[in-house]
Image (cartoon, rainbow over all chains, first blue to last red; front, side, top):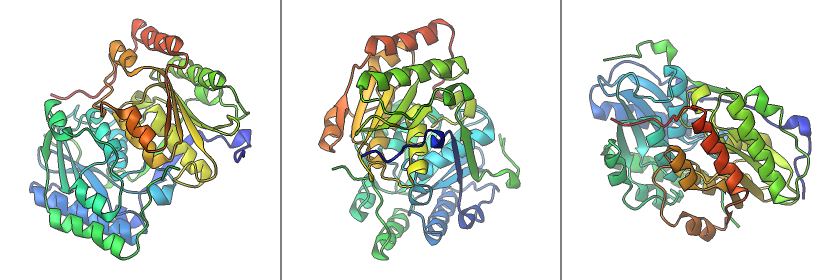
Length: 196
Length: 196
């Protein structure tokens, strides 16, 4: 069965905008306290769910003083793009903003994410030049809620550390995991592409 | 050191267009022969390098008759987005075109890539609903040329197969690996974000 036939419909341009409810929360002021940075990220989760999106958010901050560089939320369903995870969008937006694909070229950058990254987002970290990964909920919290986190190397945290990336977990884990459970309990769509 | 200070500069929209030289090669007609699909992908590598981009390309085809659904090239340097790998762009463009995040929802989809995917792109495959992965050069060919492929699960091909994704390697491997070597031999930029 062919289902795409128009030559001139071949897509050559990507466009994607964060939901207005999420953009409204972005405030670039410094957040020197780690819990405040995670607090913003969890607020972005709530805003994205309110906008009809998935229960995941991430943001990049300058390590120096916790200034917000960029943020992303899970837009898989809204954008129809299976790669539109929060971390991927935050990293892409930061690169466009900073004008360099090595996000720490002008000073070290930290990624704060509401949940330990999936296999794809984890794989993006070395390319992005991120110097510190901070997460809220654990992989197992996402899996319990029904999300597929993919096939990660068993010792992924050690592998990141060997690359010079600091790894900090369990920041506001209970609150972050609670957002995943609440999403599922209220009938939120689990949107992994399924084989077979 | 703070290097981003403007609140109103916080980015909320992504835009990215394939290079004109690459878009000129896209032709949606059926390509029932696997080598012809890989041939298109390797032509896209050449076009992207001619446009100043990285030596990687990928395309999605309908399994049924080899019709082109979407294509991507490595745009890390041009876009400043460390996640702008060929596979990620092809998958994102296909989702936007098909109007669904499960790319095989309307019929099985195959990803043909000029080189075995890096850890990030490999991680994207289960989310994307791709049913078959076809690659040219091997991971080791990319590493020999100087590219960092990331930390993949050692048995990634078996893990993909267990998810119902067929894995076919070494299609035009010599030609594909030659394009990587030629890129480096002519002074092409190796653009991994480096820690430390």
